[in-house]
Image (cartoon, rainbow, N blue to C red):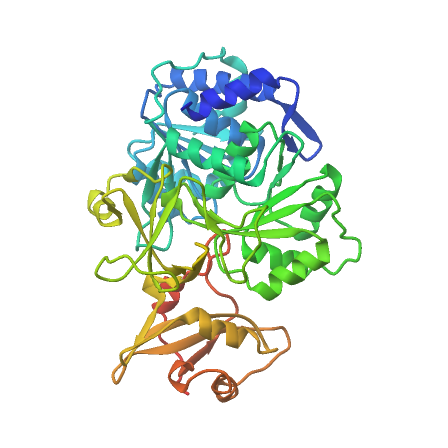
Amino acid sequence: MPTLISQLYHTAQLNPSRPALIFEDTSISYDSLTNAIKRLASGLAELGIQKGDRVAILLPNVPHFCISYYAIIAAGGVAVPINFMHERTELEHQLVDSGAKILIAWQLFLQQVLPAFQAAATCSELLLLGDRISKDGISLTQLISRSAPLELDSSLSESDTAVINYTSGIADEAMGAELSHEAIVFNAATCIDMFNINPQEKVIAVLPLFHPLGQTFVMHASLTAAAPVVIMPRFKPKEVIKTIQKNSVTFMPAVPGMFRAIMDIDDPDIDVPSLKYCISYGGHLPDELLFEFENKFNVSILKAYGLTEAGPLVSATRISRDQKVESNGLPLMGVEVQIRDSSGHILQPNQSGEIFVKSPSLMKGYYGHQQETDRRLQAGWLATGDIGYLDLDHYLFIQERKDDIISKGGFAIHPREVERIILDHPAVNEVAVVSVPDSMHGSEVKAFVVLTPGSTLSDKELFEYCQNFLPIYKCPRYMEQIASLPKSPTGRILKRLLRQTTSGKKM
């Protein structure tokens, strides 16, 4: 199996003049892309990067993200993409935790980056992308232009770590999942085969490229298949539509919140005839929204499921197979899925339990966190922490995060069921249901509600509404109206943070 960088170089040799990246009005050919990668790899080597050294990337969606990512790997290093929306403390944690030796960042992030960089003892060099470089940094573009191309390191192996992707929401501090070349190559190759990615397709990067799916599907799968990547520097719904129209984009991987934001565009001229498929990943996409989006834009939304530790895709709706309501499709080829009870016994079809995954794309482990690695990786299987079931046709249905299930007086309550009911109320725009401590039942149901603009809804009205559709023990006894729900950069609601908030009166 090839490494990520040897695979890219092979595609470039076959397609030197084809566009690899399209950014605003600029088209970058495979030949130009790989030339920049080889030059930056040489520059990184001159700065002391050796095999296995970690280099952090803190860039928005720009061509230099792709150049930096592959150059790090070409130099034998390990790429550490970091969410540029993090606060200083989280930036510092990930730099220190990964032991990054170099940080590549955008100059406009310098105010938040510099204190974190200075606090990370292992970080010796700061490479900055931009026109005005401070005395603390080295110009990334100048380093590329003045360095001679570096030939590929022949000692690089498919089993070597290629990237450390940090997870969010599973612990108080994010942990870095180590993924090998072979793991990512397998997941990307499966995406190409399943979704029929070919040189005639164009994939738009609306997901941040630091996101695991942004890397594996948008970047690796597309560039391997010689399908141009159309890069969006930021997600703005109207700009996304214009970019799809301008570049005849055919594929759009996105998260549920992005589909909702595009649906809310108040503009009749949003026809996108080139767009064939969208992939929904990273949260629950209500079927009502799915059908509405498909009908409005005449596209198919393929639901997918995965997690950072799995490379990331585990299952997806097939292009050639019927879609099942509420299902996240079939396990990818080469991926095994089991549903287990709390004792570890494998359950029968349509029985709910924890989802376990076995796949060539699984992480090696959490970098520097062996105890957590041993807890999550069990005899070659990944304990996902997600609850779901497989039906008789082996379609996967995701029900809940294991930690989000509410145990009330001996009853197990799935928040998603309650959220669906509340979301149907015309006054509710968004909702998240969590568990809060209760002296009588152990736990109680609490709803955090974001109202639609101009709407009002009392606690009593919501409780009475829920009683019409749910058993009384599932109805929220607490409600709190908030301006917005805490979310990850890709729109996943961070219920762990909501559980730390226990205010609200009992209904």
